[in-house]
Length: 507
Ligand code: UN1
Image 1 (tube, rainbow, N blue to C red):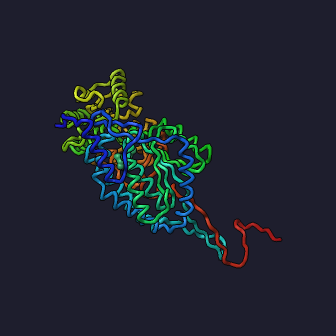
Image 2: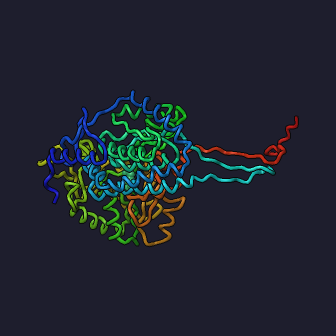
Image 3: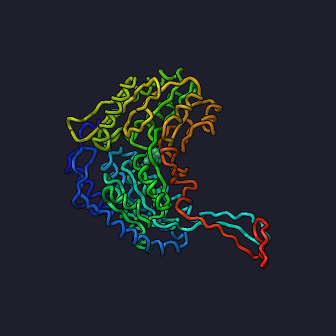
């Protein structure tokens, strides 16, 4: 299965037609590659850093109009966007598969996340609640009001080339903020298609032009966004290295940043765990999306009593994984994004072996004879005696390290002993163990799950993590507050002027 990869012409034609159906014209000077066959897919035009100034100025103008539109009316725009995404769900999923190699089901799932966040944002547009607070003074009222913040800059990565933009854009738009988006240069067609659909919704709804702009270009475009004083919030998803550059630069100009950076997510598997369920959860999180989610499971911390049986089950599943063309029905593992990712995987596996690891399954390359520039990797399962330096790093590829533990305290310490803090899970049927893992003494991650894997979060919760993951929260719950500014209001209807804290100041 999945052993015949499509040729360049076939994929290029499909990309062109699909983008066109979404309203995006493809063409330009810079060639992109499909990871499916490693061959040219399309050509697009890039802008340079100078385009950022102009885009921000236009967005600022849009902001001045949009911030006065009532939030529920802003929600109507996002509602229309959600309808258009629903209509073009299969198209966007095709572009995602062609550009980043996601299997069809996961590509459709990514678009579903976009539709879901639109639904969420539409509901939110009738909320955006502030509090009223008891005033200590008679005849006074204390309250808070949430106002639009300003222009939001979104920098997104290749692995969720559409959904990350939508989490930001849907929320930003109902909050009254225009968006300037710098997508991954590896997935420009997906970005252009998303932008075209939103442009259509903007035109149909009579919303201000330039509420949404997309800037296809290199890293210097992202840097210009980061440094631009007209960008009130920089929402950046990518590596910890990228975040280390972005965070201080935005802070230096007192801008706001929302960082979604690396993860090194673990599952603790306890003696009472349902091992079949754990195996399914682990394999989806570790091998799904070819190990290229920030929520990908990279470590299993298994109790010594169940480690052998668990490893056997995971290894058996790994040996059966259908690897190949991600658009072929039944394929579960598509290609890595590019050669660099494959080299990083190979290097990490070599380091793990050197650090005492044992390769149990996978790790090889497939289809290289047929497509020398496409990088299909067998998800790798490694047993490690301890958490060596390579295990503490995030390698953006499907490598799963299995570590042993004896006490739950030890397992929690291992879970937390990495620089990243995005997602974690525990497989157990013992409620006390689950509760400890969820408690203040438990996992230090932003996402802590019980009896499911580390990836595949729903949009209703706040998404993000601690430590080197960057601390940002986007998507559901109250993440919207990051996109607004809060004003605290004290209103005096008493006719007198009592001062707070009992201060006397009689003139
Ligand atoms: C990412 O990998 O950047 O929880 C985001 C998940 C998805 C989002 C992943 N809903 O796996």
